[in-house]
Length: 91
Length: 91
View 1 (cartoon, chains in turn red, yellow):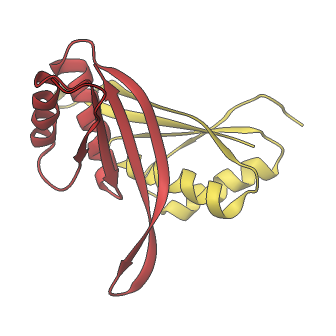
View 2: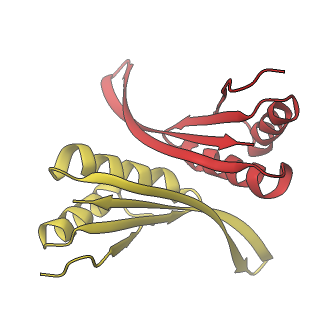
View 3: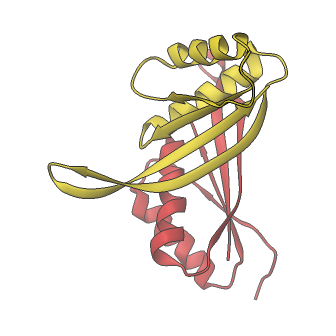
């Protein structure tokens, strides 16, 4: 079984429960830490995913750390800034 | 001047810059700590507000703490859960 190897879930536009089940599956496969990462409007969904996993699905999951930052993104209209968030859950 | 007295900004549906300017005004009036609070979809905007204040507007503002939790909300359709977030900035 892998240990101390952080798995990353990137939050996009799929339904919240898809990410919740992905996280639950990762924990059930023996991993002890998950990083849930999101940018822009997906940040709200990242918090939902972390809270649902923590409160309803996996016993003993704790919030280890939350980080917020600003990333530069280049698109067709030039460079813009977008907020990003990382939520670390451990079992 | 007030000290060690936390001011709270609740993030709603106004434009992001309205909240940024509210936070800047509070810091410029001698307060050392602001809690930015949001629920549901407003959480993304709360992160934007914190990042803009921190990176562009007020020198020496630091991220003190970030908390996420789940709140029960009762509306006409009964009781539902909503994610909430608190971001603490200090000067």
